[in-house]
Length: 149
Image (cartoon, rainbow, N blue to C red; front, top):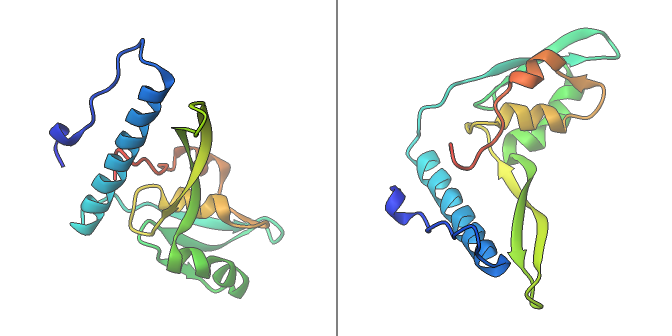
């Protein structure tokens, strides 16, 4: 999609209803663009991280952007299965206007599937203890961004 499909940003003095309407339209456009790019088989940078088991103090596997899990740990494989098959739920801040005309700030759930930017970060964030990755690596992992997908 090109920028001609992008809803016009309201002026700085716009009322909350106009801003909320624009945000909703822009959010919808961003999701549509992400879906279109994903359907094209858009090339993306593959990121791979090591998964640690803090109780054992060792690396127990790796996961990459494409959802490839390499592990001999049955526990890690079991807790990862749903995320690899169905994606990782992530909360995205959104704004809308309620029936009383008030602006409401809330979170919408978006599913980040393997093969998309931010999957590894979302995957690692959702792993239960004792699984995690090196905190220094976590800082540099790309997050899901609807504008970039």
